[in-house]
Length: 107
Image 1 (cartoon, rainbow, N blue to C red):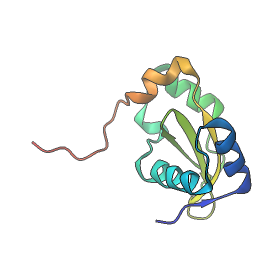
Image 2 (cartoon, helix red, strand yellow):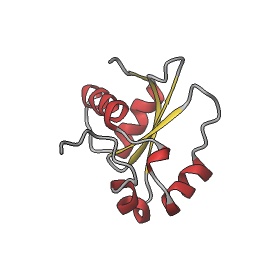
Image 3 (cartoon, rainbow, N blue to C red):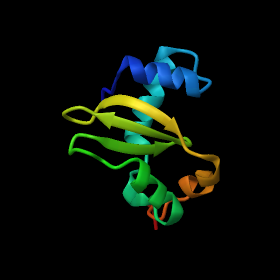
Image 4 (cartoon, rainbow, N blue to C red):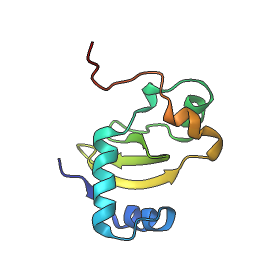
C-alpha cells in the first residue's frame, strides 16, 4: 500500500514528533493507515472528543488513531496523509484501549 504525504503533513510530523527523516514519516504514515484505529472503535469521553473535533466532513476524509496521534487522511482513496495531531494527554489511556479489538484472535 502506498500512502502519499503532503508537505503540510511532513512539516507537522517533524514538528510534533521526534522523527527526524522523511522516510521515517512515510513509514509511520503507512503504519497509521494499516494499523490505526477508527473512531468507531472507541466510546466514552474520547469518542465525544473525536466526534466534536474531528468530524468526517466528506466521504473522502478518514481519521486513524495510532501512537497517541490522530492522523487525517484524504484523497479519492483516502491514502494521502493531510496532517497529524497529538491526542491530549488526558485521553491517552482511552486511546490505548479501544472498545473493539479488530485484530485476529486465535481460540
